[in-house]
Amino acid sequence: MRSFAEWIGGTGLSVLLRETEWVVPTLQSIHLMGVGVVLASLFMITLRIFTLTGQDQSLSATTRRFIPWLWGALGVLFATGTGLIITEPTRELLSVSFWLKMLLLVVGSGFVLAFQTGLRRHEGGWEEGARRGRSVKAMAATTFAVWCGILLMGRLIAFDAQFWGGLSQQAASHVAN
Image (cartoon, rainbow, N blue to C red; front, side, top):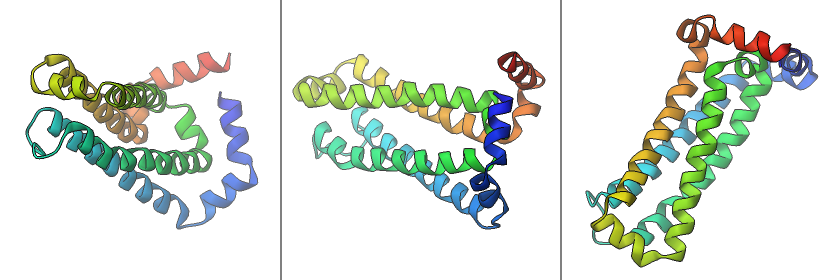
């Protein structure tokens, strides 16, 4: 993995992006705004599931309102995240926090997709489950917690060596062998 990361870091695009003073701060700023949109969208849906807000509209109406923002922001996060990886590939690709973030991202996106699909197929069941049952609320709370974990792992990328100690270096050397 180290040689791949170093290869990316040596490409003309990586050098250009890294050496252009405004690129990294701009990508980071847009990435953080995207994170905010994702978490705000999930938070509003979660609040609706827990009947703490938006009781004047159905769960499917709330979801139709916020899910497009969530998926759109995920597209922005993919684009800006890819740009950040290209600008600092060794920092990202050799980071334990980065790979945990990617794992949580797959899990969190799967939860959102399962919720969205399930709601489309059985709208009344989800609405009733949100009112009475624990399973829909548990899924909402778990999904929100996973996305908070994604946020935490993203932040820890900058402090990977200090947080994980030698684990990152051990993992990187193990992957390289």
